[in-house]
Length: 167
Image (cartoon, rainbow, N blue to C red):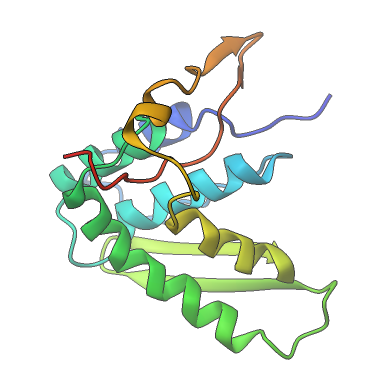
C-alpha cells in the first residue's frame, strides 16, 4: 500500500500543535503520486512560510488555494511572493539533465522547506500560477467539487486560479 499526502491537514495540525516551549527541529516528509497534489501542497507550504505574509493572511490564502474555485486579488498578491522562488529554481536548473531530480531548500524566518522534484516538474509548477485559457468565473463555478472517497480526495486537485471577474 502506498500512502499519499492529498490531505495535509493532519500533518499541519500536528506541527501547529507543538508547544512553543519545544526548541528542537521537526522534519516531515510529504509526498504524493499525483503532481497536482504535490504542486498544491508545495504552494500552500510556501505561502505559509514565505517572509512578508502574516499568519492570518497565509491561512486565508491557503484555505482558498485548497478549497476555492476562484482566488481573490489579495490571494494572488500572496502567491506573487512565492512565484519568484520557483522561477529562480527553474532558471538555475536550466542546464541540468532532463531526467535529473532537483532540490531546493528555502530558509525563512518561520522555518525551512526542502522541495525535491524531477527537473521538468519545476517548470510545471510555474504553470500553477497562471489562469487556464478560457477559464471564466462562470466556468470556474461549474467545476465539480472535490469528493473524498476512501480517505483520498477525488476530482479536482489543482490550485485554482483567479479569474478577472472574481473579487
